[in-house]
Every structure is written in structure tokens, then in C-alpha cells.
Image (cartoon, rainbow, N blue to C red; front, side, top):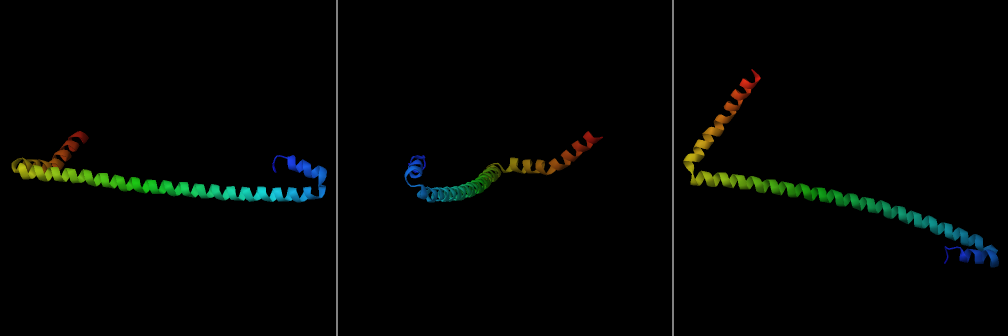
Length: 112
């Protein structure tokens, strides 16, 4: 009821001297609320930024963990294949070592 003008009109009719103090108090309260609102808004933006940074950090950690798991799986598969099929693993190794030369020859043919 203090803000809807009813009390203000009551003061204007019955206590005109108090009306000025009432208006000053209302203005001070409005300024105080605006200041608090601005502080809360700034704090909210800061906390939102902190949450975004923490989420980005956790995404990077998760992606690194997933990449490490994938590399571990590939390395384990290669080691197990080499252990259970040594002849085929040696042949695949020789083919992999010859691959850069084959790629260079292919690139040379494509460029000529």
C-alpha cells in the first residue's frame, strides 16, 4: 500500500509536511533497490560466466579422456593382434613402412 499512491494521497490530504519526507524516503528506497538489482545482475552474469568456464573445462577433460580411451583400445588391439598373429603383424608392419614411399610415388604420378 505504500507504493500504490493511497498512502501518498492520504498524506497529501492530512499531513502535507510529512509528504515531502515520505517522497524522499520512497526515492531513497527506489535507488537502494536499483543498486541491489544491479549488483545481483552483475553477480548473476559473473556466476553464469563461471558456470560456462567450468562446463568448458569439464568438456575438455571428457574429450581428453575419450581420446585416451580410444588410443588405448587401438594400441591394445594392435598388441593383441601382434601377439596372436605374429606373421600377419610383421607383414602389416612391412606394408606400413612401405606406405610413405607408395604415397610419394602416387603423388609424383598425379603431379606429372
